[in-house]
Figure 1 (spheres, rainbow, N blue to C red):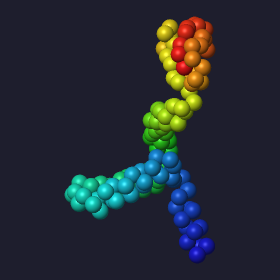
Figure 2 (figure 1 turned 90 degrees about the vertical axis):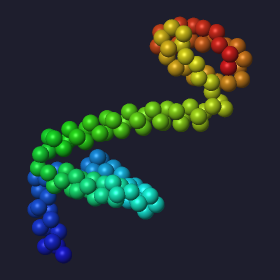
Figure 3 (figure 1 turned 90 degrees about the horizontal axis):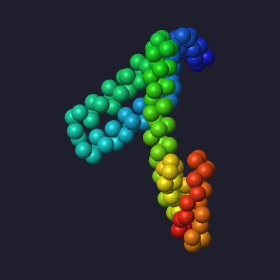
Figure 4 (figure 1 turned 180 degrees about the horizontal axis):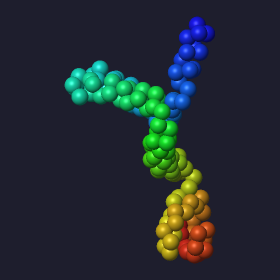
Length: 134
């Protein structure tokens, strides 16, 4: 068993290996497989296998710079999407405690506590003060 492990380590030396993009591609292919269980569409039948083949191609590749850039672009894209969803989720979670306003000058989003009636709000970005109802 140790001999097989050693041979695999030697084989992987100088190769790119797994990263976040590869991991997420595997999850996407699993999702397509589960969808295929119910819908039985020919395109979806072969798509997971093509994704897995591409994932293994990336993992066994010796072109570090290209694979690294692919992963960097993917993680930046994923961060933008998850950031917008997390902001919206936080806003929904805080809807009972806080009210969200926009600064009339710079359009910065501001959060004020609910139930304070009329208050004077000052924007942290542009220092504009304005009246608001909470």
